[in-house]
Length: 163
Image (tube, rainbow, N blue to C red):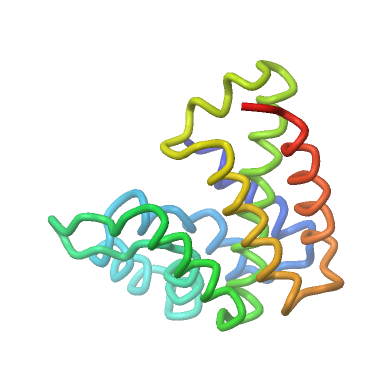
């Protein structure tokens, strides 16, 4: 688990991210995967509003204790729709996260083949739909982004691996 936040932070750093963006990259999954709204408030107290706001914007689910996540498609639709409304800092961290995930998927597909698609809670087609949707939403607001260009290329390579 630690490697992924490190990779996202490295991508943000390499893209010229600020200290708050890099910090947010390290913490981007902490709310969604590790504590919901109480964790977000801890981040706000410890790292400040800017970091907490970026982390919240990068989360597809900010739950209260005991609350269930919304269904996958609902969360992903909302995430994609929200991309144009994120701050530039949140877009940088979000795009770095999606790029790191896509790189990891592609690496695993190259090493292990199509069986990798079975690891996901959804089908290959839905996974690719999500990454295409994310890329399209970023294209509308960050058309010249180097990270977006790499995400597009990575998704195209992922598409070459059948289910």
